[in-house]
Length: 231
Image 1 (spheres, rainbow, N blue to C red):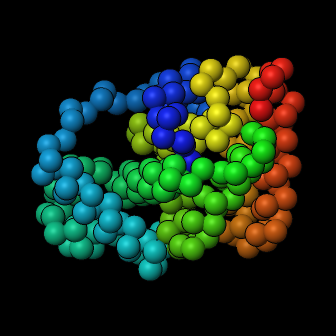
Image 2: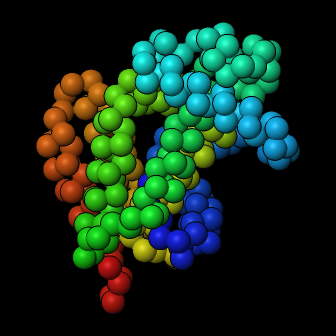
């Protein structure tokens, strides 16, 4: 999604602040988070990337049901047991796939920051660009959203990372390094609305035009929380 290059360092602080206040669907899951895994070796990271690529490719072609662990392992060129060591379940895998997709969006959008005159316009533009990226791969989007919906506490670290990424993307677009509690609250409402809009669009209950209206409307909350001299 979007973060200007000069804001990269602030993203880490922003994500930590956001977790202190809770955000998106990861709010209730952080208590049971697993201990941090040791860093992957270069070979392990390459293997993990092949797995995520295979997951995304299968989901793009056939959605949630098309992502079968055995087929993912075959497409990635790894043993089934190896796949399960990286991702204990299909839900873990698809949530990690969404994390990976968000990271790609973030990197891509860093190169072309939003051009809105104020924070509300920039956030709305950012979220609609992210939405359109998902729109180009509707089966993949549906698979990832379904995985997030089905995720239980065992998937909390993966869901938590998705939540942090989404929060950081919005705050980056706002141009904030030190958001207030009121601003973080507005961000949470914006995240909930974006997620809900994605679900209603995927289910055929909302048009792209309606999604755009909803996103632009909720982003006006930013104006209500703006501090004097900012925005």
